[in-house]
Length: 75
Image (cartoon, rainbow, N blue to C red; front, top):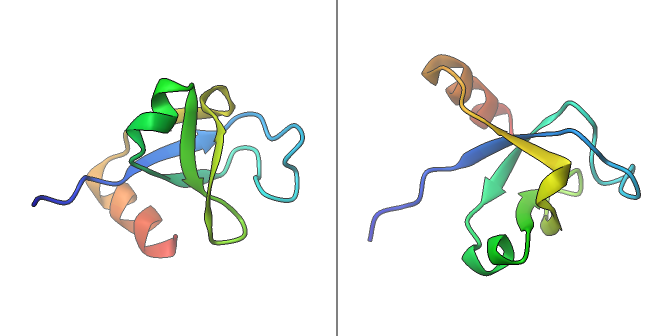
């Protein structure tokens, strides 16, 4: 089975989650079809664990390959 490519998103609104999310920071988004149907995304947050957040709090980004690789290595 092929692995799903990791998606990246920038946090644009951390209201109510200031300890878990930093605005303007890039986060790894994990695949979760059920959450997406509910308007949520599964994100690895500042705790290092994955949690569900409102999709409206993030803006998915596509980065040049070299930048993407550097971001994922730092994650």
